[in-house]
Length: 372
Ligand code: PEP
Ligand code: MN
View 1 (cartoon, rainbow, N blue to C red):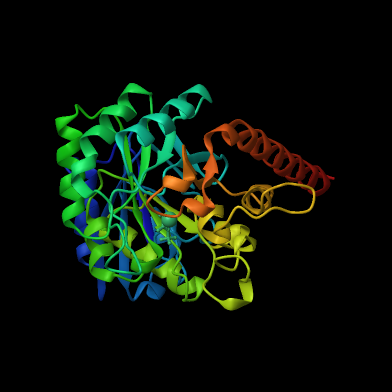
View 2: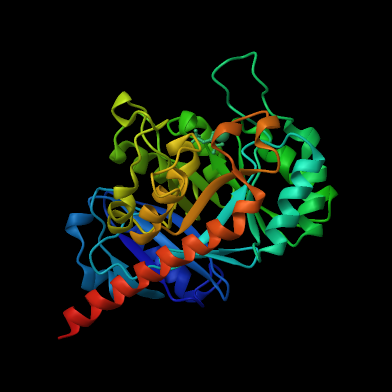
């Protein structure tokens, strides 16, 4: 059960102290306090864990400082959608809104290879009105002999260039807790000229110790990729690890499943789960068409498969797109074969707009039918 407190009920108020007194007298109930930073105020949620079946919603609602109460099912306690749950399905970070109701494009480099690639990419983004990107500094690779990413050495120029070209959020994978400090330090050194969304890659979806560490910090939002060989439920529970640590600013990323059934695509595209994740949880949903398809193959009409699957995810209501581009894909050190060209960025964005408008028209159509 979750008690959502009135915005003005901070821990130093009498109401809060009275509430604490009431809660401490409940038998077999433990409490966890969770702070949710909003743009206007900080909301306090108190999670009651234990024998909550013995409590009634009315009794809990009448306690001092309580605004409303949500009885949660066992599934995805914090991030899940529960009955009569009016908690928002959105959060703001560095001036960008992440929500189940909007769409952000994160076009960028799979891996940072040189300052020139970074600058070329960011310049193209600015010219096309984009304020978000993806840039990999720490790359988990199948072979230990492959390029592992430039790590912390590239962060200063990545962040400086981001500031120069007006980029507000960079999605960047972290594979070890020490990367959080490296990112924070480089951001501080470069005058916090941009923001970072920490990405947990598919190989680390169930790295529970990393999830706990990343969940315990509230500075950066998190993009959690679905595990490529586990069930959706297992991946959603991984997201819940982040939230239970204290950080519920989480976007859930679909990136395809590893199976030969998806051949010739690199992974079996799973964007049919966009609406499933939105129904089960309050997380905005990201799609990664690049790592799903893995190549620049085209349909007979000439449209790249990467763009086809992007449209499939967007027309189903996806909220974020993580997509690989590169100024010179043949020279890219990671995943060149799936990268789109900078010249293709305007086309890609226009195509995304068509699919998003179609999604919005579909929503309007279904709303008008249910209103009748
Ligand atoms: C990536 O986005 O660069 C990446 C490695 O993705 P995934 O973890 O989904 O393989
Ligand atoms: Mn990649």
